[in-house]
Length: 441
Image 1 (cartoon, rainbow, N blue to C red):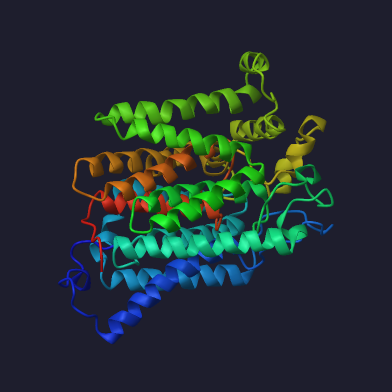
Image 2: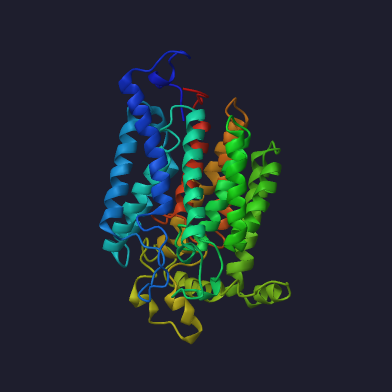
């Protein structure tokens, strides 16, 4: 994304780029496309879920993963530092610095400090890479093209998998884990709960591209993503996908920032109270029982009850980033009521997971960084002459992540594809609220 203050981005229209500059631009675009495909496909696309030794669906502990994302982050930051230093300096806000300091303290106080530090290093690398994504392309048009190419390649790979190797692209009753998902599409992803949110975001991307110079491409991406989403069986993603589109149409018409806060955040609070709260309060559980829905939220209540019990024992510092579910000492109090929770690898609620691992102060700082500030940035964009369609796209992806976190855990989750796309949206809103966007290179 071009910002003011970058010399090579302010050259007159129609002038040719030097060869070296052209090579650098090509490298930056390749980095955007390559990073997105790596995040989506990982080093092990089309995982064999029938492997009886498979105990954890999502993996990211290989040295190759850490080294690759660390190197990509360093390369991306170096390229952006050469022409976008004002944008990089703007990231050093007080709330961002406070959150990073708290994470350092949390890692030191972790039950497993070595594991927490190891996993946070990967998360930091992936997050830094995501923050560079909007800065790497030289213009909005170039950013659109990079996103369209990456999305098109992913969709082509996923659909080819469905057609050519369905046993590795569609959940089967023969899967060693969650055989009840038989028939749900997952494509190159390891699970339909990852595929579905990504497809929802690609649908948003397609709808945005329809409003740009890539209209036909946008229709193709939106159609393909919507079809895949419907066949993935992702109920949460499908429901939120439509609801967020409607919510955004109202948010963009509100002039008051506090009205935006109420409309965006009060429903999130209520959803957390009615879902996670049902695992802690018999009164709320009784209320939920009167509704025509699955009162266990597909078995999540057992996990939430266990997580809340753990949070109550260590509410301030938490158990350490990424260190709760992997610590055998935390399983000693589990009885038969927590049988499934004992095998869980996360809380199935992003906000509860943050409270459990980085403590209540960490949760509040994360809410400020990831919820309050992005909405404030969008409010600022509305009062500027910035690119509104692109800002609306970032707002839509961000809101989708905010609401999806009530049912899934991806916030601060290493190289999770949903986290990566969510951070790109947060970063895009940050930059658009502070810098002028160049439309074309």
